[in-house]
Length: 294
Image (cartoon, rainbow, N blue to C red):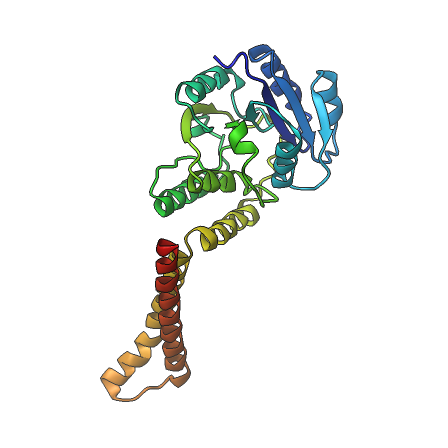
């Protein structure tokens, strides 16, 4: 299968003392030839000490944030195949051989462990499944593809991808960035259904639903400004046009019924929004034309 290729298992960790030992030992059993690297992001518990006791290589990654840790991993670790997985024991290491076979048999750059077909009852926190579906659908729409689990933290990555991709994410938006950049630059990506387990009792997720959700949408906007700038300005044009329509609706109805505008400031705002919408639309047309002719 992938026996002759050097495989690196990359585990970003912050306070995973309850689970890191099992994750490492599962890899040592399932994939004994792999090099296992635990990147400790300034844990305040015994994560690093426990990882060292299993003979895994522990590397301190001081810059706070999962995205910074992943960037650190990609810079310093050399291998033919990379397995990226969280240290919280929610991803089944036992399903890795099937993922590796899928990776090799289809000559892929990325295999994403897709969690949405088979997951435990409490595996997803409140709103997380909804947010994941929303983000995956947005990416699918923007790039005319089919992505089901853009936020999965269990991935197989090729050396070609790891050493040729430039990442900017500092936190939990890193998976979204890897997904978008891989699609845009034409890396061969596929999803593979896996089981997704809930965290064991006492283990706490570091993902903040609203803060990290907003960071993901901000990242999508930043990347789209570079990759599909016309579409971004069309979206802004739609938003300002709709806002202008709503702002101007009641003053227009007042004029229609009474031949008098009672709320002059509101109609001024509506007109300004419609002008701004036209400007955004014009910029979108120019950028789309420039992109197609460059």
